[in-house]
Image (cartoon, rainbow, N blue to C red):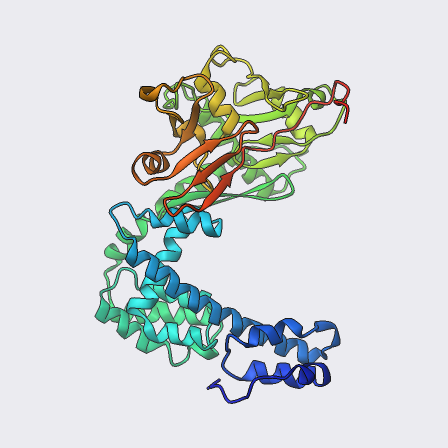
Length: 432
């Protein structure tokens, strides 16, 4: 199926019979030279059927490229394997991924290349998508080689005709048959993956997702439902809206627990940055909510005025955009250097890392033992990237605008940028 049968496509064919050309490319096995032909096909001149064929041909070309990328990643994983797997940082920076996503991509690639060669060949031929291949690879991570091969043999015959959802069901059934783990064993493995994640949206909202044990999720929902049930006849909120507000109330109440552990000497607070001009109502610049990004000016003003201590207000300088005021009920800002660094950078300064600065080490860029001062020489680095700087050959250089240039052991250069904070406009803008 989809074996290469057609000769190379001529440019005249593309111009004279684009529908016929793309129909042929959708039928045959993808080849590297097809990429040029596909780039010449204008969807505007294709028929409706031709555009469908173009989608199929492009999807198969993407699968071919994905297969090639798996081989590169697998080779990197083998060649540069070490105790801490620092190749993860090379992949993360080069592809602009998080460290966790880069690690997953490496593991998937190595599994496909070493343990699932038949699936990798299907990907190479454009008969399945990368999502199919990645799902199978992840499904056999915990299996031995014999079990992995057995699962592959069971699911591959039908894979080219299956949607991703259908394929996922087939894989789950095959794994259950080949490696029949007990319910307790499955639960123990799943418990290792429990986590809570935030996904910011562009409308000032954020999606909160959690993978929890069944009884833990039941406890959370019972508490949320109980709080949401406290309402009045004139409450305009829907039940779903009351549940969402109840979950927020639970979090805010927990933040005021005096027994909560401190980070870098500070009790947990949520940082909101707002320009003084926005705080005064003379402009409508978006504020900056740490861990989320831009929020509407009205929301930023409301949070900055909150006196509960939940929100930590930060105000920026009109010209430089640097922080002026560090809010109430904190250390003695701006004299407290740790407080300043955490507020300034918000997250680890390594490229692509999003670990909150309050949970990072405060590292001297130039070692104190080598004459580096403490003032203006401190950056937040998570534990892994702090070690990477000192042991794995990653070298940072911070610039006056707050950008940090990182040079990898392979001499590739990457940059991390500080958060774009709102700028006060209460004074006249500087002349051009």
